[in-house]
Image (cartoon, rainbow, N blue to C red; front, side, top):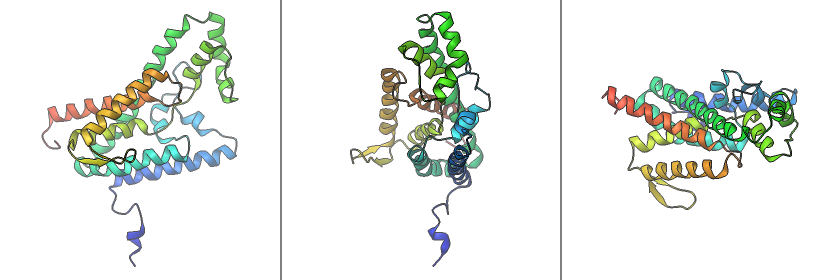
Length: 248
């Protein structure tokens, strides 16, 4: 029997294969480091820029961190299913650039949306409370608690809760697939019906926008980061289509 045929990574294009490996290794490293008392998500996850824990490199590193096995699985499954097609069409260099720009763009949008929300709530806090959040809020979040006052707790969560995951890049990949192969039929799991890629992407994007506005970060999912990945992906594809005929 050919052992290569049993390897699920065999036949995958190089960038997708290495992204899968890196993301799995980073989750394993997160588990190991946690046992040693080191919170890698706190170090490499994305913090709001007003948090004392914010570092510029987090705009890159956060997309290789995940909150658990389920989070990792769904992102990597989408990368495996759709990313390999895009890399075969675009080539490794262009695909990697697209993946990284979507991820960084998603992080930027998440920071901007959080800043808008923070500014909308600051007027409801007295200056001493806001200063307390900036000075001590991170420690409160790390202890698994938050402020009893709803406004203070929301501001603290927006500033000091980390964003992790490749979802921004993955949503950019979904958008690209829908734009390049709009009429390809996708079989949904729930409900199990076929749907053209262009409609799947449109519905998913509209759902993320609704959830981002309606939940106001209450469900712990960075919906606007997902939309940010799609936005930056759309801009890149439009730019490439306008400036080259090679790939489109």
